[in-house]
Image (cartoon, rainbow, N blue to C red):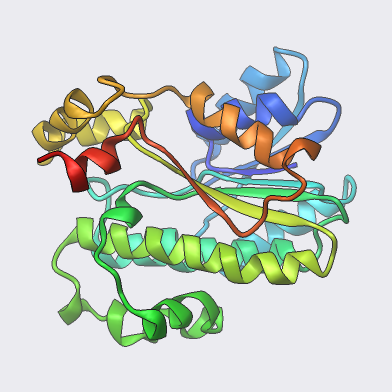
Length: 267
């Protein structure tokens, strides 16, 4: 298993699906990768930390190469990324949009038959107005090295870091659909999950950031009336990655306690 992003959601999914296999834990900060790997190893898993940068193709390829030295790649869990309060517009697009696209593409070239992948998107991608079929197709199918050249992703067309994040997450779901066709030719599946407010260190950064009140109000007003947990996201990932989800690929699943429904339809 390749796990990118040494955080709570990725680790929760890896604990559900990574037993009995080698888990390669990649993160931009080696100390984070080591912390997650150590936590999992102390719980009986077999995890190895690797430093990797999702924004760089060479780093992604090095991670895949490292994974292949210990066996075929059966699972991908991509939980790496940055949030609107953590990074600039340029960094969000480079990591969350471009990096995710490259990772799905490169893993898709080598994924084991009957393998499966999950990439963590966000409810934010569902709040963006419709972009139109032409733009959707460009986000889905443009060669990865030309993605950041698209007009819709140019600085003059992006209002702020939240808008950049929404565009990146919309792109994630479109890339998953396009990649599902390619992964399918290898007998493998790829899906995305769009969590709402899940209590993680990244979410706590948002709670304490400039949009903190907005996020707190979001989960207070949603039907669930609370933020979610990483294990609740892992519940969905377990279905999608296991044989019980064998007929599900190229799909995105909202796991947001109804926050998106409230956003659009709470009159």
